[in-house]
Length: 568
Image (cartoon, rainbow, N blue to C red; front, top):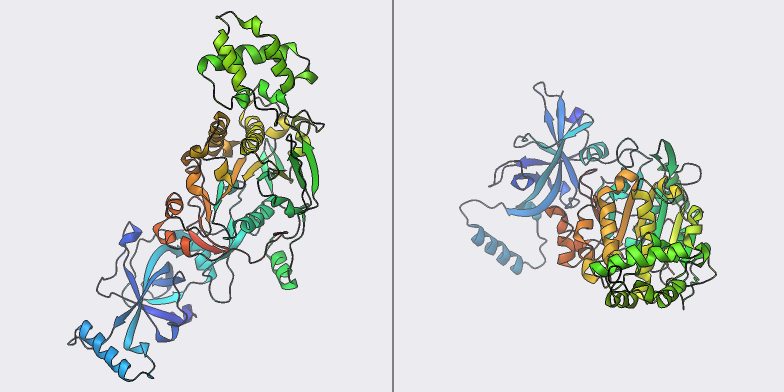
């Protein structure tokens, strides 16, 4: 059986040894595969496109395909060897100068493409490249099946849609989906980072991805937890008041768009179960003209401090001070005070009234007591005695399967107060998910994704001003390392990935990278070399995705439209 009867595609070119020969090695950098591209294909040939080189068995039957990516293009001079290259170039240049209207004929040159071998496909299986094609092997554009298997792409419609492979075959859209398998650990619980500069499209991309994660009322995405299947709950910390717009439909969707989305199980339009939980902070009021989602105002109760005394150690405590606060002052206050009177203002009054009760140096030396008192002041804004219900009374409304709970901080002008809100709520969620003896079983028993925009403002060790912020980072490090066991995932969005704590960043398995220009930001992401050069040149909405446990590194084009409302 001849080649043409097995492969109906147009031949793009032939392998040629060039001066470097043909080679592959254990390290992809050692690969040296060069294709001589046909004249008719030169105009349409592009960097980053995928190609296949067939292998045949002893009887001439198609056996395997080598999937390659074009990583370098060049013209090579094709004049007789007795002329030196320099001399020939000058002769041609002089001729063209003297005949200014003459069209340059690229037929006078060889058009060479350097190809990077990615994988070998045998039937429906892939493996690392381990055999070398023969010189003059024919090169074809890779078909959808070869690309999907060769890059380890998801083939399941129910997985989380992100975008399309940027260099799909002409006329085809190959979807890229986060693998959301139930049998193994779903990708979102191994944590996701979305990074991109201003105007790169990271918020639109994030909204589109989260919309898929949430599922819908009919076919919601579920995960097995404690022997039962439950929908994912998402808590979104929102410093710019953008994500509550997910309560509204997106605009400008054509009928063709809708048909394509429906056929490919891409969820679009609003997510009904979107609720805003606005923290009540003294001197502020949350109001938004950008959405009509239900808004519930809550307060942060001082009762959280009983089990988390570090919440009021903004300036840091020495070991003796910490022992005095943790072992004497707070336990005595909570034991001696009625539950409904355990407020921050009453605690400060308790300190004023009971100073003489702690004069014994065995308990708290006088200087230590005074130091503790100085360091626990300054929280009246966040432990505001408002009429809003405490978040602890709203747990069953706050964490709900299939619900997107937005926590805006845009109305909080003081960064310390905003960081405190994020710390307090994150601790409440993390502590109850990561312990075997939770205060709120309700939180423990629901798959949960904590999503944080502008994560560099809260998770940067270099930017911390208080002990609480350091403790927040420590908690997120613990989640990053062990959260998957409890179906607790992180979804971090940032324009400054190099500012996020390295211990957190190293545990994030999937990185979605849009346009970034800073070299330090790109370097910290540890991308494969062939992707690094693409990042500063990505156009809006285009991204490179590095998810080594689930898929090969891939360039992806996001949807041109936001699936929910976006913009102001």
